[in-house]
Each structure stands twice: as structure tokens, then as C-alpha cells.
Length: 557
Image (tube, rainbow, N blue to C red; front, side, top):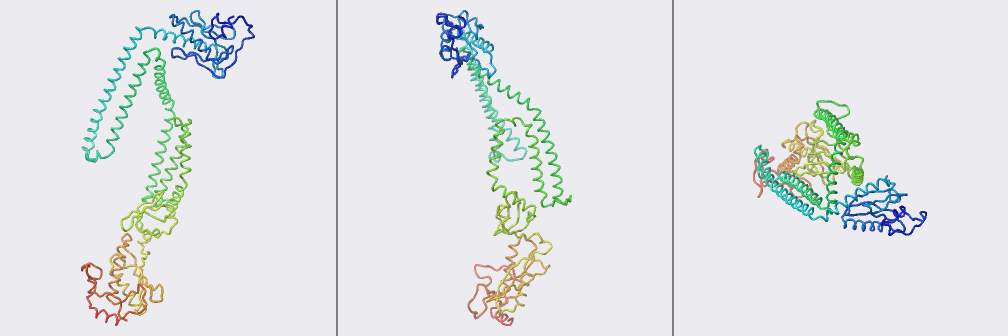
């Protein structure tokens, strides 16, 4: 009969069927489990179907019995009794629910004795709170405490908000006074910057965090005052305490690993700084190395530092807190995918930059021509090269483009006088080539910024159908002033050829003109031009009339 009472969900003798044989009892595992909950507290999870009654039907029968017990103010004692094949839980003399081995989740390590003991403790607490919920005096006391806690919480929130406003204003005034007093910036510049805004946001975040902490604890305290909401308050308190405990234990457990990581990074930083000092000495020429040039020392230092730090990260990775978690692994996979999909053009630019650096094709400060861009190299980067043109423009050229084009460096051998700058003119066959050569050399002599050693050279580079092409090769003193020097040289060439009546044969012509196509000296400053004694050639030669120029040209020919 005891076994029948165990299996029957309500446990009442009047509801037990008449004396079936024990072998006829039917207990089987249900497809769905159901948790018996009373007074908002979970008591036990039922998983067995007994006499065809599902776990939810067994739980509802037990709830009806508990309601009758509370209605009669019966709340104990709660006990568990062993019977053949299971346990029964009783309140007073009343059987509430029976537990079978099928109700136990053996895979999670549960035992029927443990489940029964835990169910007894939970049921006792639930019954006590159910009786408390029907006691007006205790509810009034709980309500008074809840109202007091709510008022205290509001006062604390008001105090935090007021302190935040005063503290933010005071800190901003102190920051303005300290920074402006130290002379780092004036008040307008400081307020225009993001420094004060960042400070204000940090203080606001701290105030919001304190406010949330106060509100959370106030709500937890209020919920725990009432029997029905007490489980919610306890779960909130347990969650907060568990979170703090977990964080604290994680920090304590991570201290040895963090110490190891710190030691690794300190050693890496020392090694990196020592390498930096050595490469800096090579770059400045204080140390000679057979395999590192001063031009490549800076880039080699960066590459060596990157490799050292990557090695340090690989060594320190196992000691980092959370390195074995799925979240950390997910971040690593995400970063790997970003590098994989975004490295197609990036690797090409980086390899091109390394090729430029280690081929020593360019140096900072060199005057170069890259494609159609001519100017001074300002920066050699990993991804691009910056060139400032003679017009003051800053041109950013991807390294892959630099590698794919012809680069002319005007400064590499400029100090040795081996870089010759060409400029060409085309003169008709009726002009004596010796005169043309003398005029070009004289123009080079008059031009400031053109070296006289090595001496300028004139070459007849080609004999065309209508004219001879002459090329003047000069060595410039400053390649950075290349455009200005060539401008002055071209001006002197025009003035001298006009002065001596020698016609420059560009553009092409179809027939010989009656007189040479030159500009008379008295027309050199035709409006709106003005006479400038500093203009090239203005004060170098005596003034001649058109007839004198024509006669001189005819005599020269």
C-alpha cells in the first residue's frame, strides 16, 4: 500500500485504487519534465509518468494539497520517508508528492536521496513564506521597510546627481586653471579641444555606474521584503554577489599569468629599445654594419621591432586571462578573416615599400621624377611615398605605382657634379653652329644656380629636316631649385638669341622669312611688362637698335 501511495501523485489513501499487485504498477519516463513550483519557489522537477499521469498532472495535484495545508495554517514539519522504490515527501501527516528513481536525472549526478532532501528544504521555505504572506502584521512591516528603502534610494540618487554636477564643474575649472597656468594652451583652445569633453564623459560614466548600483541594490532589498517576490530579490542579490565573486576569483587566478605577461613585455621592451639605439647609431653613421645601410636602418629597426613584439605576443598568449575561452578564439578568427580579405592590396603595397627601401632607390630629401610628378621626397612610408612638387603640392604615390614606373633621381650624384640637366633648342641650318654653341654657353654662364665646374656642354643631338637640335647640358647647384634655375636659363637663352638675331626654329616653318623672327631689344619690356634691372640679361649687354641687330645677324652669318 505504501508503494501505491508513492506512485499516486496526490498521496491520499482515499484516492488510491484498490490493492493492485505491485508488479502491475506502471512507472515510465515522460517525454516532458515539469517543475513543481509553490509560493514562487521551485520545489522539485518531476520526470516520470505514474499510472498514466504526466508530470504536470502530478505537480498540480501536489499544489492542491499544499493550498489546503496553507489554508489550515499547516506548514510543517516537512519530511521525506523512504519506501520501496522511492521517497515520499510529507507535511505533517499529509503525503504531498512521491519521487521515483525515474524522476532523478542521473546524468547530472543526482541521487534520489539528494533530490528528496533538497525538495524538503525548499518546500519548508515555500510553506513558511506562504504562511507569512497571509500574516497582515508582517506584510505591513515589510511594506514600511520597502518604502523606507525606496526613499533612501531616491535620496542617494539625488545626492549622486548633485555631486556629479558640482564635481564636474569643479574639475573642469581646476583643469582649465592648471593647463592655462602651465602655458600649454589658452582657455579657448582648451575648450575647443576634446579633452574637457572626455573628462566630463568619464565622470558622467562613473556617476551613472554608481546610480545603477544604488538602484539595483534598492530594488533587490525591496523585492526581498515580500514573500512572493523574495525569490526574485534573492536571485538578483545572488547574481550580483556571484558576479563580484567570479570577477574577484578571476582576477586572483589571473595574477600569476598577468605577472608572466608583464615580465615578457618588459623584457621585450628592453630588447626593442636596445635594438633601437643600435639602429639609430647606424642611421646617424656612428656605427658601421656590413649588412645594414644608413638609409635602410630605420625601416630595418621597425621590422625587427615588429618581429620581436610578435614573438612576445605568441609567447605571452597562453598566459593571458581568457585566452582559452571561445570568445577569445572567436576574436582571433575574426581578426584573421579581416587580415585575409583585406591583405590583397595591402601586402602588395608593403612589399613594394620594402623593395624601394632595400633597393635604396629613393631617399628622403632627394629631388626625383616619378612618372609625371617631379619634386622632393618628403616621406618614405610602408604603403606610400610622399613627394612635394616644385609648386608646393604634396603628392601621395602608392608604393606599387612607384615600383611600376621609371624613377629619376636628380640628387643622388649631384654633389659630385655628375648629374647634368638638359635643355634643347632647334636652330636653322643658316645659323653657324659655333655661334649657337657660344650663345648657349654664354646663357649658362649668365644663369645663377648653374655650376661653372664641370663646364656646361653643348651637343648637336640630331640634324632634322628643317633645323639642327642643340642640347645644353648644365650642372645645377641646387636640385631643389631646379624649376627656377631652368626658368632663368631659358630666359637668358631667349634674350641672347634675340640680341644676336638668331632665330629659334620652333614651331616648324614652310618658307624662309624675309627677316629673322627675333624680338628687338626695345620691345623686350612691351606693356604690360616693366623694366627690371634684375631681369636676366637686361644689364649684361649694351642696347642695340633693330637695324644694328639685323646687321649684326647678317654679319654673323
